[in-house]
Every structure is written in structure tokens, then in C-alpha cells.
Length: 210
Image (cartoon, rainbow, N blue to C red):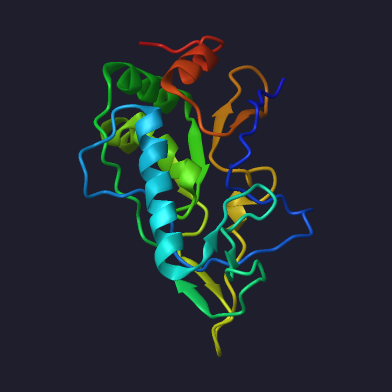
């Protein structure tokens, strides 16, 4: 049976059957110039501060929604912007240190062949990485869904507003953990960011050799 966690309203993916589209105006990312956040609440607070700062300085409303996919660029009046967007891929640098529990979880996920899907602009994906911490994330097989960036309305260049093929349906709601089943074919898919405690609970159904 497929595992599906409750999808957080701010998850970053885009279902292909959605008829709504959006454009990336600017890269939203957690501030990295301050001491490493120690709790999920700290991570969320720092990301939100960065988001609000960008909104205040640019007049652009930054959105991240399962219906909109790529964060939308809207003018202050709420209308979709037609401005050119050309945001190259930029690797997110994890700042937090991994806890012992996070390292143990990452080790088990690695042995199970688990994969984590996400996008460099996805705020929830950044939070998931910070929850793991840089050492545990380094042990994680991460699939970047926009490895060459995002582009829209740039004269003479094709748009890049859809993820790479590896991140298509059903792997198009991020962050998403995918764990191969141990018996039979198929995979378990866990949508939305997970705490270390939640990942520990999920892993209790798998047999992992030490």
C-alpha cells in the first residue's frame, strides 16, 4: 500500500492535470547569513523573513502552492506578470548541523535506496534539507527537478517551466520521499516535508540491516 502523508498547503509541486500556471519572478530562499537554525520553527521563520523581505523590496508577491507549482510572479495588483524571468539553477546550501537521530535516519534511507525529490526554488524543500542537516542531507539521494533553472518570456529562448522527465507524474509534488518496496514491485511515496520523528516512524515498517 502506498504511504501518503497529509500534504501541506504550501508544498511546491505541480500536478500535470492542473490548469493553472505560474511564473518565477525571483528566487525565494532561506537566509544563510545567520547562525544555523536549530528547530523546524526556526527554519520556517527564517524562510518567511526572507520571503517578506523580497516582497517588500520588489513589490512582487511570491507564491508557493501545489496548484501553482513554480512560485508565481504577480504584480502588486494581483495580475500575472509578463516580465522576462531567467533564474539559473542555484544549489541550496544547507546550514544546519545534523542531529544523531537525523544521521541514523539518513543511513537507513540510504540503505533502502530512498530518494528525495525537490526543486531549488521550493521553500518546503529547503526546510526539509535543513531538517536533515548538511551531513544527513549529503547522505541522501536528492533528485533536482529543475537542474538548469527556470525561464519564461525571454526573447529568443524557450521557456523552462516544467520539471525534468524524472520528476514527472507521479513524482511531481515536492518535497517527496520515495522508498522502494521490500516485497514485490512498486514504491512507497511520502508527500510533504517530514520531521525526523515522522521519518523514524515511517521507517519502522522496513527491515534495515545494520
